[in-house]
Length: 273
Ligand code: SF4
Ligand code: SF4
Ligand code: SF4
Image 1 (cartoon, rainbow, N blue to C red):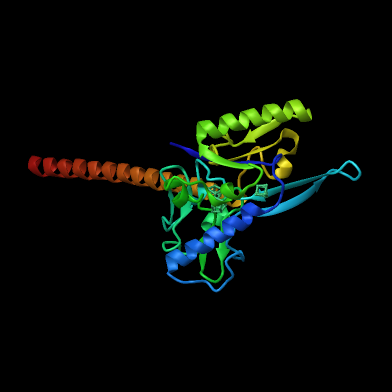
Image 2: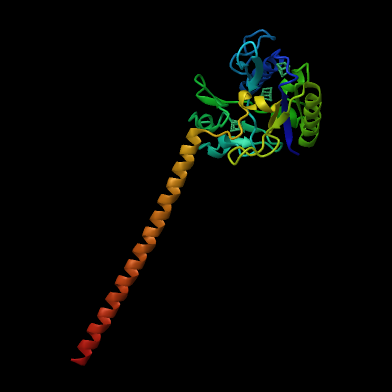
């Protein structure tokens, strides 16, 4: 079963309950994994361990401007470039689709950050490892919902089996279109491009605002293009080496043939004498 998260920018109150819940959940994970008790108040969130990064953006010119609010977060891409390019094999895809960094295997090379089309993985200077949202796979695999989804008071975050989440999303965008008179999209429900594929964390936004929400029509990284170019260069180079080796082989074969022919000729001449 493919598991999906959905963020609905229209229903979001920007209360940041999701961010606090994420932080507390990750603090508990730290305590569980490291077997330590962190010296912080129970309700104090853990700075640096929240993987929903909030932003506000004013779009248009005053007095016709609008304030947009949303979050940067991992989108658990179908073609997760972080996973594909991690040289240490430290990133895995869980059975329900979450893309997870295994910090103990991470070598801190930051490739995941360089190739992510949404600029998501964070490099932690203290641990020398990369971190990002793990989709609360541990909770989901235990039959719970991600911590951020559970905390959201306005159901701006929902999660569950893909069919259920997308059906709810379609209902919402139809309702918003009727009530607010604009056109809405579920970004990431269909394949976005070759680099990203579909998303495991989709977003609802007004179609005309999608780019302002960084929901790009064709997300890609310059470094990725360069990397692809290098790979292609490498492939061309490899092809040249193979072609060169083949030509060299042909040359050696022809040379050997000539040598055999000359030797046969010499042998024949010697025999005639
Ligand atoms: S908890 Fe829900 S409503 Fe509050 S900021 Fe997060 S997504 Fe928005
Ligand atoms: S959004 Fe970035 S970090 Fe998340 S799965 Fe996609 S490529 Fe990886
Ligand atoms: S799914 Fe879990 S780790 Fe990811 S942003 Fe939500 S609470 Fe944080």
